[in-house]
Length: 381
Image (cartoon, rainbow, N blue to C red; front, side, top):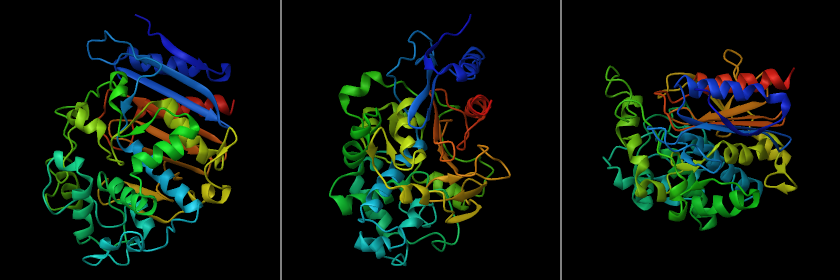
């Protein structure tokens, strides 16, 4: 049976409909959305498939899902806005804004270390439960008290869950607002973007459940060294994708992992970075701040992900060995299961893929790669 793809796209990008339809028809995707902006204009806004495994409920224009670590780019943008206003210095010590953080050898940890997974705090020493993750003060208190697992600034180790609390607490100390509140008021509202860090209950009916691989556990393989940074990171706090279906998870603010949106809202928000800080006459950051995202701060093989990374300010940077775009000034991030955002300042484009059927990986897969490749093939034709 032919898969119907909904939404719109410029004729130039019509081939993307077939790529998305084929993915759903093959069962690689269950339900998904893909969106792209150029010069801030939404040139692709497509969705297809179902929100449930029984395939009785179609993915709607306003369907939302948990995008896991694609949420991190929203916390990056919050920090960039504060930096642009002169309220945050990425080269300053975190303790300047959050004095308690200076405990146990962290007095010299820089704000950019938090942005770039280089703070040595990728997991927690004190065991925590899933419910503890909904207690902001408890988690930030534990992070403030903990000693780094490696010398901050010397290497990266993916702060899968902790990064959001770390950046979020700095935002809270500066503004007096939770990062979810700041994001809603200063970013989502001006851009009229349907994305949430902490979802209001009235939005719950529009959320589609994620379909996890296996039993939903995010832990690395059982063959990994149990005392490695990777194993310790995923062991505590431990994550199970089925937790994303609970009201407690949806309402909480976990800014590294529980943002809810769709491809349209993700691409819309990150088009600000693609367009040098301004979209539709709405300027959130200066051109200088937008360009600073592309300046490499640290690189090397990540201790948690086990893959080479180049990082600017939060965002991963394009790499010659495995380019995500033909353009140099391109950055990205993705979420567990497959969601992706790519920001191309040379093309002034932002591209996002969001889905409900999760793959095992943490760093994207061929579903988004096929759509991104199709976009560039059409753009450059």
